[in-house]
Length: 210
Image 1: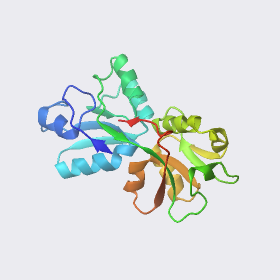
Image 2 (image 1 turned 180 degrees about the horizontal axis):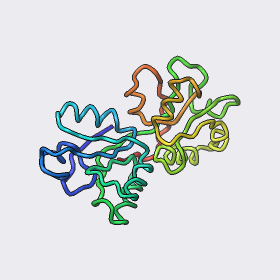
Image 3 (image 1 turned 30 degrees about the vertical axis):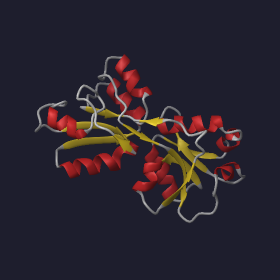
Image 4 (image 1 turned 45 degrees about the vertical axis):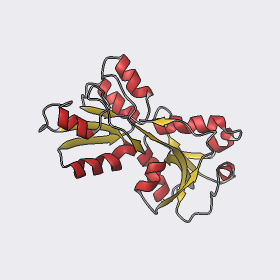
């Protein structure tokens, strides 16, 4: 995941900016963060390393957007796509969003498993997949990929589990409940050694922006 610092005016801010300049209150206040599940390792480590008080909630970006519509008011809303923040901004619920990080989608398989060795194997009879729910960023990105593949319908037919966020997909993989799943590259890194990544061809790779 690649990062860059943001101006204080954005609703999507790096913690250091929020704390040091007071985007969410004075520098000593607790910063309330709602962030997509795939950001949990990076945001948790950053807050611990920086040594400031952050109340963090991680879930599917669509679920967090629904909470904001219901009245939850975090200092920072960090989503795994641009569509949800743009919608909330149009509704007057967050400040103007700014892209602050990028990622890429991969096919993850349990480490050492031989059931899936390439994308072509995803369409094979008996292969089981986990993907994100429609509406969840990881699920929408996955459907973009499948729509660009000539055998996307056959791959979709092998889906056995649809999860509300990427952590649910990772859970299915580490439990051995499925043969493969579409996740972010950073998720594979975060659980180092438990799953392997199969890269997607660049022609089908979606633009993953936070």
